[in-house]
Image (cartoon, rainbow, N blue to C red):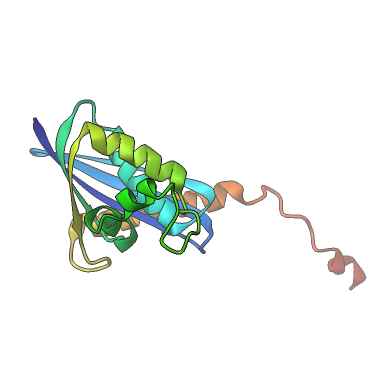
Length: 162
């Protein structure tokens, strides 16, 4: 079974708002960067999406080490939250529905294919791959902001009153 390392990150301009995600997949000496974004999302959705996209990019079952700075993402696996949510009908301990259920269900499918180990890294520190993922995710936000800006901003009607 191939051993792959994936670094992930997600970001939002405001939460909720325009978001970006990124993953770096590493196998032996080869690294591949992938990234994307969404117009209306949350930082947590982008964190999960980064891991999903990283796992979806794998063409066969692999042994995967995923490094994330998201406690929400890593703790969902490391502390058993995801298993509890699923067993409780997608309800948290306070009986409220689990947010991002659609993404968690996809994550369950993907982690059944691969042997995944989760690792929490400190964000915005000296981890070059986490920092690079952050750069890529923020770049996706900038790209989307530019695409979503109107081509010709309407003129300010108060200009006619001067």
